[in-house]
Image 1 (cartoon, rainbow, N blue to C red):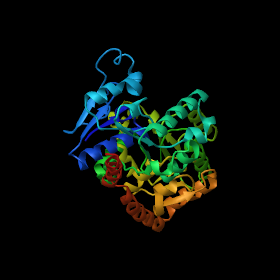
Image 2: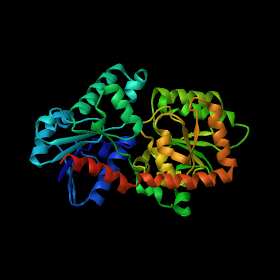
Image 3: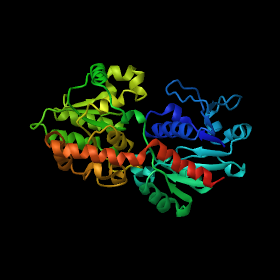
Image 4: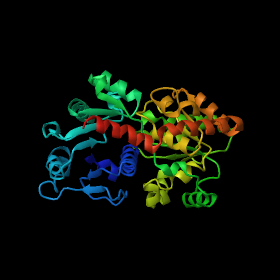
Length: 383
């Protein structure tokens, strides 16, 4: 088969949607090399490398597509799909080209979450309308819908009334680098480069309201007299991030909460921007703290489990799916529970050892090969 992908996020996105796209494309290329994979990328990027013998990047070549790249991606790309004899097109992040169902080209769309439907107040109203229209269109017109968790499948049925039999749950994997043991020498190099402390808790994710960094900071305040272990937060944001920074300043946590993405070395490092240094950071931490209120899946949880890093996460949404028996669960709205979990992570060595083992075993459900197999089965079911 010639399989096409909406590759905008694969080439340009450094967060969850980008990681999902790159990991899946690489996994399919490796485990199903008999197929050809065409990545439709609206503009050039030197940030991520997706080269392989059976992977081909396609960018708009002619006017007006070279000027109106967004229109090329959402509409005009159909001409290129026909040119390259694409048998099946996969929209990796909620969208498919308008009218693709009339071309004879089979299409699949991955829906990661419907957060904008659950928490519209956290978005610009115009964005909510745009997302709803795009997501709903994709669910209606794609031949098959991939949900990345049972939680997302339920939401697609509830909000868009998509028939259950049209939806397949295909769990994602993560970069295999997280499952490889990082040498002490490499960990020391990364610590020195970014000025990391010897011991720290870790948060990874966009600094937005539902991901709940503020309550982690409140837990750090509750622990201020019990431990000097700081929190390292990787991620960025705008309005909510300023709320977090204000809380840090007002409560004297400036040396206890490190916003690593503001570090000059992190800003200038390609290895940080591409997440190449993240496995070393994960494996240097005491625990991952990820008490999000809602997720489509929660990829940092899986990255931590592969890294044999204990995880504190939420007892709601899809996070018990991601963490299984290997995580420590808390009420995300309760800073005291988060603080108690953090306290146990640095004081209860037996619990930590058990969590590492159970977490590693649970992570084996989400290997690259299994992830690629479930998606390829969806493709084959349409041919």
